[in-house]
Length: 165
Image 1 (spheres, rainbow, N blue to C red):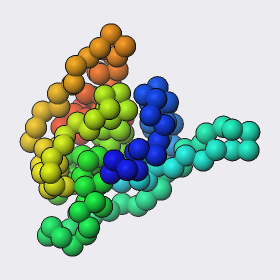
Image 2: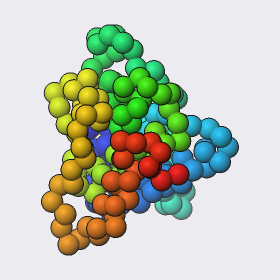
Image 3: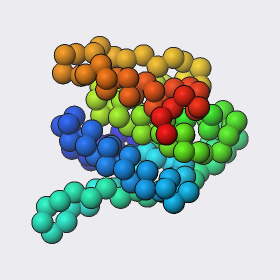
């Protein structure tokens, strides 16, 4: 989880730009009626062109949470749990456009505040927090526009119908 994000640039503005490029790539998928379903740091690559331009690449495929802990390595489950929407981790729905938006909101939260919105000792505890705990902004500083918090909060709304599309 953290090790894959640590490979990204540490400048918050640069991270935000990469997340926004990931959002643009996700919108392109959605326009083709494709849901990514597994947006997380490990599934986002940055390719540098010959002229030094960055290009964001989305990898991965829709993953299904297995019912029993221990069937996948904890680091893989943790990596998925940190960005999955509440309706996915609870098993209520399969991935949708709205769950992709939620995952992008989580990455934007991490880019802006430097921490994950929900942290715990295990993947299952993290997943449970996505379902049960309210999203709380860390201290908003003058360098963080209130509108940016509004975008993050709307993208991470527990109700998928209230997320932007």
